[in-house]
Image 1: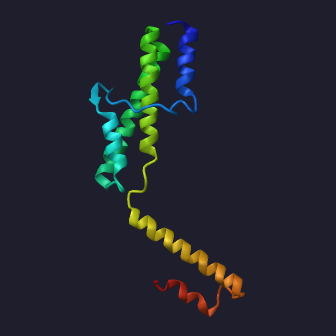
Image 2: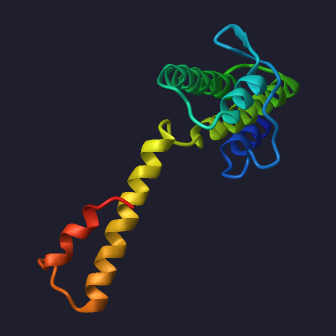
Amino acid sequence: MKEYERKQLLERIGREGATVGADIPDRIEVQGEPVELREFVFEIKRRDTIPAGERERVDQAKTNLRRERIRRKDLIEDSDISREEGERQAQAIIGIDRALNALENLGPTNLEAEIEAQETADKKRWMSFLKQALGHDQDSQGSHRSSRSR
């Protein structure tokens, strides 16, 4: 591979929008082991919440994918490979990035706690607004009402 081709590939994988329109590979080899990447990502994303045990599995998968990305990028940067092999590695890196983006954007692990925290914050904002709108002090008698349940 010529040096300018190498630079083009490295620029492509480093581009901000490189993953736009990219597919997650069906299967990819990560640290010497075949991984059904697309199936794994979609299985995880299908769930509403991720249990603690699964969260560890997802975190480990993300770590392994990041390591594999670095290994493949180093291969493009430093190895004597053909243009075709460089293209394959760049496509794999973009697919890994796409999978990482999907795994990074997972929702909270405890949806119920998140909802409760949001409702509590909403109630506090509402009470603060009412006090301000009605001209009450922060230390007024009505402050105990915010602790009542619906």
